[in-house]
Picture 1 (cartoon, rainbow, N blue to C red):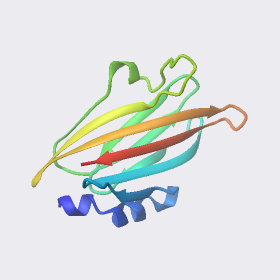
Picture 2 (cartoon, rainbow, N blue to C red):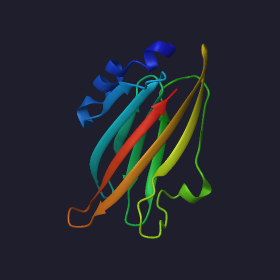
Picture 3 (cartoon, rainbow, N blue to C red):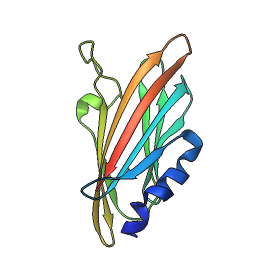
Picture 4 (tube, rainbow, N blue to C red):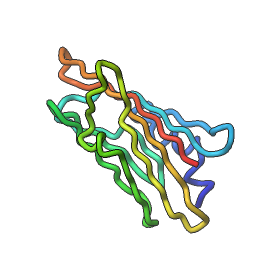
Length: 137
């Protein structure tokens, strides 16, 4: 199971509809990356780790809906700092990523996930541009 969920070809194919890229990390594990423009009020998948999770984001006028949908029956726990709970932060004028951490309790051992998402609103397009990455180890 562990080798399946860390297969970059499988992850790239699963996220090909929205341009997700995937590769092996040098020290072992999987790196996922994507970039999407999402209309205000629309929900879109931004990252997809087959057999583990799907990250959906819904930008609103002043908030960001974040949904981590499990794709496994194994126990999983997600956490984020309290400052990230609404998806937007006052970064003092700079870009600060939304950070989520997850732990999957797989039959052949735990797997950790670190997700970072940067967002930049495009008011002319009525959308938000997201750049996201996840490291699975």
